[in-house]
Length: 160
Image 1 (spheres, rainbow, N blue to C red):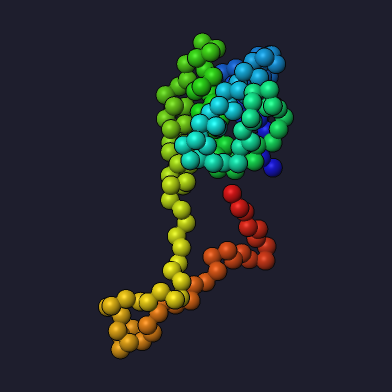
Image 2 (cartoon, helix red, strand yellow):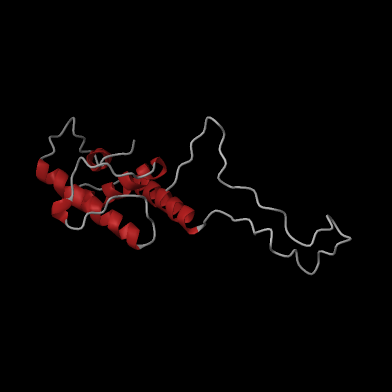
C-alpha cells in the first residue's frame, strides 16, 4: 500500500518542524502543500523520472486522500524534497542534513531511471570473429537467453 498525498504532505510538514500533532494545520495549508507536491512530481515526470504518481490535469482535480502508487524506495526523496519546497512559505529553514539527504535520494532515483536493466543478446546473434569453432564451446551463436522474470514460488513480481 503506497502513501496518500496527505501522508506525503504531513510528513513534509514534520520535517520542517510543523508536526500536525503539535500544530493545527488548516485545510488551506494542506491544499497548498499538495499543489506544491503535484507540481514537483509533474516536474520530475517531465525530467524522465516516472514514479507512478497521479499528476492531476488541473489543481481542482487533486484529492489529498488519493493513493499515489509511488514505490517505497522513493518515499523519502519525495518527503524531503517537498519539505524543501514548502519551508520558505512558513518562514522555516531546512537543515543542511535534510538538503543533503534530499539531493542524495533524488540522485539515486534518477540514477536508477538512467540505467535500465541489462538485457541478454538473443541466441541468433553470432559470437563474432574471435570465436572460432575450435575455441571454447565450438558454437557459432550465443547461448539461449534465460527468462529474466523468474521468481520463486513464494515471491511476487513487481512492475513499475
